[in-house]
Amino acid sequence: MPHIANGTKLDCPVHLVLSYIGSKWAILILQELFQGNRRTNEFLSALPGISTKTLTARLRELESYGLVNRTVFPEVPPRVEYSLTPKGREVQPIMAALNQVGEHWLEHSPSQPTARL
Picture 1 (cartoon, rainbow, N blue to C red):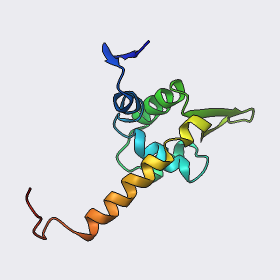
Picture 2: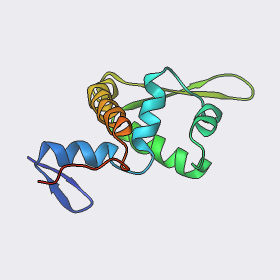
Picture 3: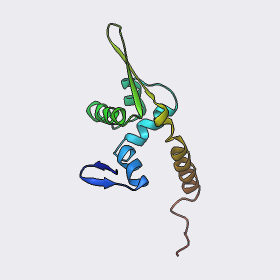
């Protein structure tokens, strides 16, 4: 049975993946987690422009999709760390491909003429 999200039937694999990681900031949050576990303040420092409210919402979404783990340590004050699940690590090749394309595009800046099809 196909997945349903926001009233849209997701029987296309690309649509399914994008429904999980396509929201604003999600890919950048995952990119940070590929470097290791992160705390809220580390995300806020690494992602200028993201609000605490948006960060929390995106982390909750990614957690609900099974891509991110949230660990609360029994300390005072409580310490919360986020990490990738094995399912979240499956996104790493996609991120590597995006990085490779981005590096290529940066080398060939828009100021250079491009071939038309």
